[in-house]
Every structure is written in structure tokens, then in C-alpha cells.
Length: 269
Ligand SMILES: C[S@@+](CC[C@H](N)C(=O)[O-])C[C@H]1O[C@@H](n2cnc3c(N)ncnc32)[C@H](O)[C@@H]1O
Image 1 (cartoon, rainbow, N blue to C red):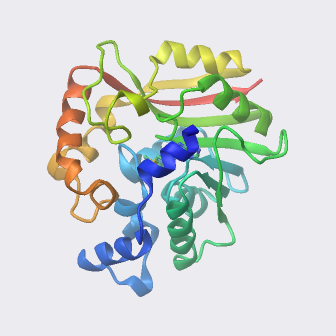
Image 2: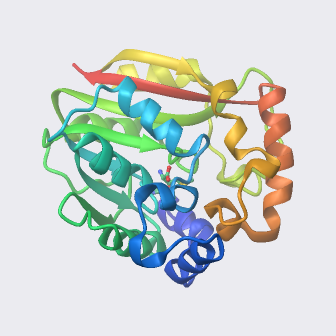
Image 3: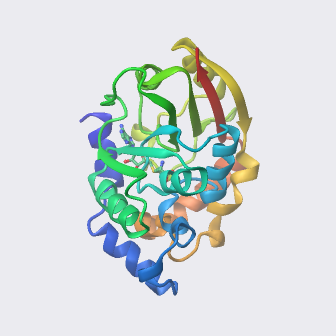
């Protein structure tokens, strides 16, 4: 199976839009007047939640009218934030069909269909004209992808000269191995993290200049930690009973520096 099909089988869930709406209703949200902040617990599927998305968008100096491709953009929480709060036009591409469908429904529900579109696709085979984009955005999405050279070469190809890659990714820390289960992998067969220095070398080798490279492990750790995960969080909806073990392993992976979280902005030379 390809990375994309394996990822889709791992992440996909039936009836996701219904489950998300039920969780929001149970949390007391009015489904007829949902805001993107109401959605944040259920559609920002990464460490640090919406605050991490805003942090990265500021790091990348995103401006209104910027053409963004969000690769592995999931349910579209980051994309809707970039559209609503930063004025960007965003295409979300993701390998998991149930996320693409639920994401498009949520985008329509909050009236952002003119700014955000959702497509099924593989990060390793982007359907984008060379040089068409201002920004490639990718947040907690490359963990299941082994071929990092091909992944980042595809990002570089899709960007115009001077265009930027804005990324938040878990990377392998100085202590190995990681403790399983991880949010993205039950065992080592789906976990393709590399150390920050290796990742940086891959990114530079395909033609990027690193403009910012920040270790945000400590800063972003709070919001995916134990009781801080609300009852209606997407992590609970997707992972169900497996979440407690994932949270426990996550504490150790962070505390023991087995996994670090990096935000980076890189410019296509
Ligand atoms: C943890 S979720 C992050 C979603 C989103 N970036 C966010 O932060 O809310 C990881 C996402 O990566 C996607 N993904 C994994 N491998 C992929 C691939 N080869 N091509 C496209 N999407 C992929 C999954 O389908 C999933 O939606």
C-alpha cells in the first residue's frame, strides 16, 4: 500500500461530520451559528490547537490574498483560520476521504466556501502547476511519509520563486526510540520521523533557504496533554479509547526529548 492509502486507512472514520456535530452540540454549541472558534477543538488536529496555527501564520507573515496549499490539511481547521483571520485563499489537499468530505461540509457551514476548497490527494503527487503557489502549509502531516526528499521536492516545485513553506512537524528527538502508541502510529511501521538536522538538510537540498526554525515542544505541549483535551476534541472522536495510552506515551516522548516539535518557515530560492 502507498503512504497515502495507508494513512487514509489509519486516519479515516465513517460518519465523521455527524460525530463532530454531535460532539459540538453536546458541548453546548449552537449548530446553526457555528464560528471557527467553536470548531477549533474539533478541526485543529495537531499539537497546540488553533494557537499553534496562528503562531505559524505569524511566523510566516501571511497576508491577505496569499495563495496557500495546505498539504495533509485534514478537516481544514488551519485552512479556515488562514482564510478567516489572515485573508488567505486556501486549497486543502488530504489523502483521507472522510476528512475531505467533513472538512468541505464544515467550511460551507461557516460560510468560507469562497476562500477554502477541499481536495482528495496525495502529498507525494500534488496536482499543482509548477510555481503556482505563494505558500505551501503543512502541519503535523508528514509523520506517515517515508520519502521526505520527494515530499519536500514537490513542495518546492509547487511554489513560485520566493514562495514559502510554512511547516509544523514532530521530529525525532535526541533520545530514541519513540514510545508507542503515537497519535499517528500504533507502532514503528507507520512512524517516519527524522531528527531536526536531517529534516533541515532535506529541505535545504531541494532548494529552500530556512528563514525561521523554532523548537516549540515546550510551548505547544499543554493543549494535547491529558485532561486538557476536551471531551469533544477531534483526538477523542478519532482515537476513541486508544487516546489515553497515546496521551501517556506523548507525555514521556516530550519530557524525555524522544519527540520534538518544530515550526519552520523556509523560502524557495
Ligand atoms: C494529524 S492530521 C493533521 C491534519 C491537519 N494538518 C491539522 O493540523 O488539523 C494528519 C493528516 O495527514 C494526512 N496525510 C497523511 N499522509 C498523507 C499523504 N500522503 N497525503 C495527503 N495527506 C496525508 C492525513 O489524512 C491526516 O488528515
